[in-house]
Image (tube, rainbow, N blue to C red; front, side, top):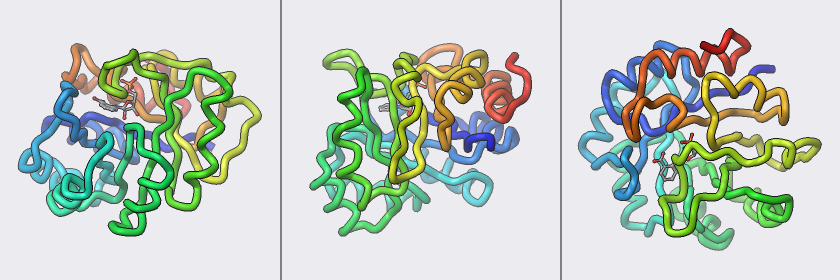
Length: 215
Ligand SMILES: O=C(O)c1ccccc1N[C@@H]1O[C@H](COP(=O)(O)O)[C@@H](O)[C@H]1O
């Protein structure tokens, strides 16, 4: 079965409309001030209202405190909160208990040992997400870097999972064939510059992920 598709880092009305028209399953809004895709609460609220009901809304943040989570949830009312920082299983359990919003937990992957912590998060999250490790000191994601998809081959997990990191229209079909993810996530692979989404690349990515022709 074709995986679900998430377009992350939506930051304009036109990118939102393109993702929805391409029938992306999830649209991601980034709350990370060091990211070129960062949104303030008010622009995020407006984009969320444009997307709501047409794709599932995901808000992405890294190591948020409770105050930040409360503000994001109140402004956007997302279907999912993606935690893309170094949140421990205990912290994720606390977020789950306090806020009850379905969680996507991201894990940075470079070698097989990086999957070891994943199982401990299963009771508290809806989906896992596997991304390449970011360079030291850099923003934790959105770099367009891939990890070795073969590391996922033959593994099973207690939750559905996203493949992320360095996906593009011209490699997403190969990535899906290599490791059979439940969902794929892309940010920089559908951009012409950091934070600048391209309508043709978004449409090509969704089509290629669903078994169409890569552009
Ligand atoms: O997109 C961002 O700016 C971002 C910022 C901070 C953490 C994660 C971020 N994006 C996520 O990173 C992965 C991979 O992105 P890419 O396709 O390789 O550019 C993806 O899950 C994004 O949701």
